[in-house]
Amino acid sequence: MKKIIIVLGVSVLNICFANPKYQLGQFLFFDKVLSGNKNISCATCHHPLSGTGDGLALSVGEGGAGLGVTRHLGFGSSRVHGRVPRNAPHIFNLDPKELTTIFHDGRIEVSSKYPSGIYSPAGFDLPEGLDNLVAAQAIFPITSSDEMAGQKNENTIGKYAAEGNLKKLWKEVTNRVVAIDEYVELFKKAYPQIKNKNEINISHIGNAIAKFEEDGFRTLNSAFDQYKKGNKEALNPSEIRGMDIFYGKGKCSSCHSGNLFTDNKFHSIAMAQIGPGKGVGFNKQEDYGRELVTNDIRDRYKFRTLPLRNVAITGPWGHSGAYNTLRGIVEHHLNPKKALFSFDQSQVNLPEDKIFSKKDFTIMNAKGILTLIGRTSEINKIDLLKNEVDDLINFLHALTDRSCLDMRHLVPKRVPSKITINE
Ligand code: HEC
Ligand code: HEC
Image (cartoon, rainbow, N blue to C red; front, top):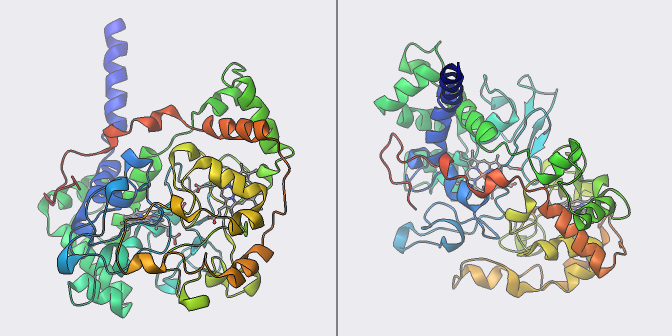
C-alpha cells in the first residue's frame, strides 16, 4: 500500500513539472533567440536568482553583459545604446485573476473597449489568441529596441522595432523559434491542436511564457499567509505590531490592498526620478507615469501601486529603482515631499558610464521639478515612531515566501537554440 502511495506521489509531481506548456515557456523565458542580437532573454532582467528582477536601479538592456547586480553596459560597438528608463519589477505571483493592469504606467490592462479584452500599446493590432494580460505583456519586451530587439541596422527584428512594425516583428521572432526543430516538437506537445509548424504564432509564444511565469513564480505561502490561516505562532510580536500599523494608522492598505497588496490603481507618492526618463518634460528626462497612457495631466507622476509579496528581496525599489534599501522606500512613504528633496543619490545602484552617468540625476537636481512632483503626492505625512517603522519593516519581511529564497530549480541547464544562458 505504502509503495502505491509513493509511486502516485512521484507521478503527480512529474505531471506537474512536465506540463508541456510550462516547459516550453521555461525554455523561451531563458532563450536569447527571442532577442534581435541573440544576446538577452527575459531571464536576464527577471532572473529567479535575483528575486525575479535584476538587482539594478534601471535595467541594462541588450548589448550589456553579465547577470544581476554585476551586469554592465557591454563592450565595443555592440555595447548598450542607452539606459532602460525604468526598474525591472519582480514578476512573482502574476495572477491574471487578481491583476487588472501591469507595467509601472499600466500600459497593458484589462479593457472591455477592445475585442481581445486587453488594452496594450498595440491597440487593435494586438494578436488574437492571447490567454490573458500576462501573455499579452510577454510579447512586448521583444519589441523594444533597447530591451531586446536591438538597433535598426543590426538585425531584422531591430529594423521592425525601429519602424514600429509589430506585425512583421512578431512574425520574424516566431520564424526564428520555429526554425529550431526541438521547439516545433515542444509546441506540438504544448498545443495538441498544432499539426504543422506554420500554425505556430506569437500568441503561442506569449501564452507559454505566461504559463511558466504564473506557475513558476507563484509564491503564496509566507509567514503572513500561515498566520491568516490560523497559525498564530507564524508571526512574532513585532511582525504583528507591524501588520496592525500596515492595516491601521500607517494606512498602507489603502493602496496596497488585496491578496497581492495592490489596488491595481495609480498614485503619486512623489517618488524620486533617475536616469534617462521617458522623453517628456524637463530636458526630455521626466517620467510622467500614468499620464503617458491616459494623456490626462491629473495622472502626472502617478505610478502603479506595486504589489508587496516578497518585497524584502526585490530591491531596488520604486519605478526607477531609486531606493536601494527597504527602509529607504518605507521611510519615503512617511514624508514623501521631504524624502524627495533629501534623496541620497549615492545609494543608486547603476553601472557607471562616461556619458549616461552625467544625466542620471538631471531631475533630482532640478529643484523646480521636484516641487512639482512633491505637490502631487497623495500622502502628506504619516507619524510613526522609530520602533513602529522597525515593526512595519519586519512585517514586510514576513511577506516573503521562503520558497523564493531558492529558485535554482527554475533555471534550465540548456535551451533549444543552444545559445548560452550563463550571462
Ligand atoms: C532589459 C531588461 C528586460 C528584459 C530583457 C525583459 N524585461 Fe520585463 N521588465 C523590464 C522593465 C524595465 C519593466 C518595467 C517597464 C515599465 O513598467 O515601463 C519590465 C516589466 C515586466 C513585467 C511587468 C511586471 C509588473 O508588475 O508590472 C513583466 C511581467 C515582465 N517584464 C516580463 C518579461 C518577459 C516575459 C520578458 C521576456 C519576453 C521580459 N520581461 C524581458 C525589464 C526587462
Ligand atoms: C497613496 C497610495 C499608497 C500608500 C498609502 C502607500 N503606498 Fe506604497 N507604493 C505606492 C505606489 C504608487 C508605489 C510605487 C511607486 C513608484 O513606483 O514610483 C509604492 C511602492 C511601495 C514599495 C516598493 C515596492 C517595490 O517593489 O518597489 C513599498 C515597499 C511600499 N510601497 C510600502 C508601503 C508601506 C509600508 C506603506 C504604508 C506606510 C505604503 N506603501 C503606503 C502607493 C502607496
